Length: 391
Image (cartoon, rainbow, N blue to C red; front, side, top):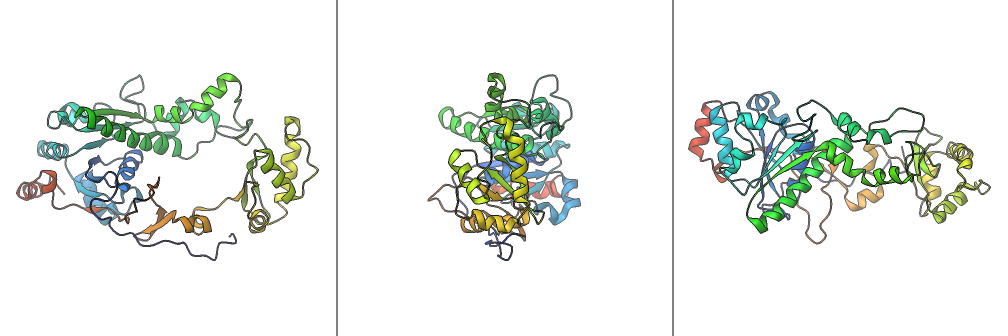
């Protein structure tokens, strides 16, 4: 545990955001329940004021009970269950879409069309609707109908080949690059672009958000670097653990520190504070193995907390590698309120921050019983519930 281990996280219980808060206030989003990237896009929109209604399967509602409301990515949303394999359920979904601004759809290509809720079906009832399609491979191409996961999408994008240490096999960065950054975040960005465009044209747009495309875009700089010769094989470059001044090192207590002393001034500060003033010239790559070995030995000589004290207030770019259970307690994160607590779960607050706008509280997802504001009168909703179509 670090020197911050005895501090409590500066978190507060989330409360429901006041109606109308945020730059997306008034934007209605229908989110078809699915795996990570779709819900993440919906969370991004809900975090900034959109009214997000997640549509689950009726059977899933019955199985999950209140657990369906506990997910971090469902915070701020309302939820219902709807049987989209029934004609009544499809008709009800179209009525909801008629009152919506955005639909987030997460099926394989062609599935929504077979259900009768594809873009053409919904644009027939709401030409202003923005239809966001989230897939791994995209709506066309040889792999469009194939199964896949984050690791597959970033592999075919060429991204996975760049990740890992020299001489070792490629290392997937959990599902950050494909699902979340290349998928959900790109879809949320696409929705914002389409909302801006609609102000000018009055018409909706279909968004083809493919994780393979998004992952490739995130690595745009490195594709250029590989073609120019600036970027070499994985694990041999300045930013991918190839350089000793940009890596992690273990400490005496089994912890780790992150070193990012790239610029000469930062490197000089690191050298001074570690006492390794006789290190060879780092600009000569032939010296990198010796520099790495001596840095590793130095960092193993003290605990992580001791190194934090040594580098406190410096520009050496040395930071403790915090566990997820420690991050909320770090003084910087606590001072900024980077984390909060909602329904007993510590989680990151919405980002980015719109300064001067204030921040509403966060709340877990809740069931939506009254759908009249979404164009589904109480009498009709009651009939659908009685028929088992609406949960």
